[in-house]
Length: 82
Image (cartoon, rainbow, N blue to C red; front, top):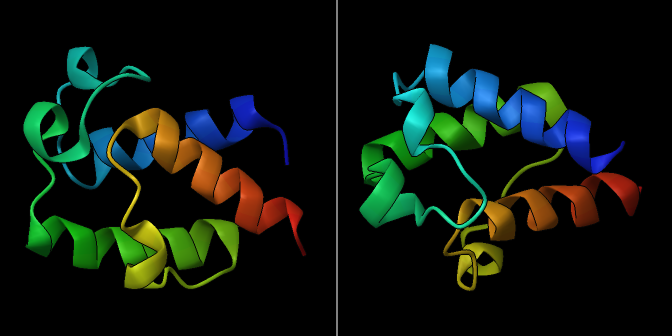
């Protein structure tokens, strides 16, 4: 799966499912500080990622994921490793 497709899917679920304002979605945005993702949102993200990308997020793997760009790279690595 290409990076642009991953970015598009992530943007869509952030806007549609988590009601994030579109202007808050840019690669350097910090998930917690800029996008506003909290622990309850993260539970939803785990379910959404599994449905859209076909893998389960392991919390320990998310330790270094700070920005949306980190998140895209994490998903890209998992999806393309299959």
